[in-house]
Length: 315
Image (cartoon, rainbow, N blue to C red; front, side, top):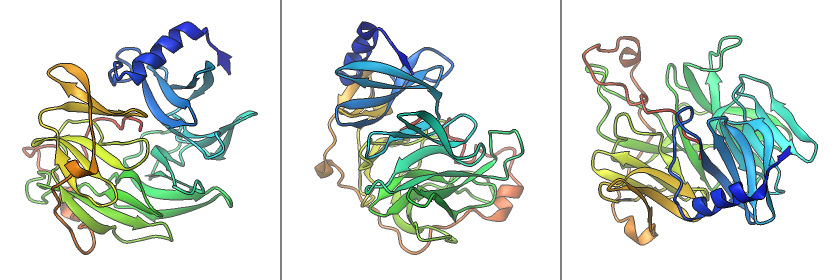
């Protein structure tokens, strides 16, 4: 661990709390993402290095490890997924592996009771590769270190949005087999963590993610989801699937102070209340999975498949 001079990171932390630091793309310009917050400490990713750091009122520390996603555990230690897709743990003695490289992909979420981790599971990863063509959803029991693969869909990366009680909220990207065009809705579904399932149980229909937009962003407390659609900025409840629209705001980002987005070219804090989430389109039965023909024979003239959302941004 490297202890940094306090004044530059203290300034950075103040900017974060004020919502003044925009969410920047890794590799383009230096910046930070707030990944989690607990007991007066913020877990952040420094960009473009992807190095983890902890900010608090008593100091700032870089941890000397890189991550794609990370979360505080209930005891203040850290679980993270590194660029080699290893699931790791950072404690008083530094970093150790829980699962080897190639085993886990971002995003990473900790269950409400702190006993289980949920993450994407690389499928068909070739030796030495760290860019799987598909990802399922898996959980790791922290007491037994037992992993369970809950869902995999051929040639598809399932999107994982967080915990709802002891279930997981997911989306399975889908598109028309004939035209390869994205479906005109996002279907949220729930996964049990007991074992493998053929499909999630449908919860609600939402407006689809705007093509080319960033991966939908889950709030640090796993209560809300925010993303861009062609109807405007969507804010949805993870537990119910009800949602509201925030006009033309774009590029949402969560910190421990709430939601901010770009409005008229300026990053602005946006109030979020359950009372604002007045729209609801219930869904029933199992979530429909993509037809095999839509995966194997894409239309070159059709628009991008709905999984063509820009890189996962850590939450």
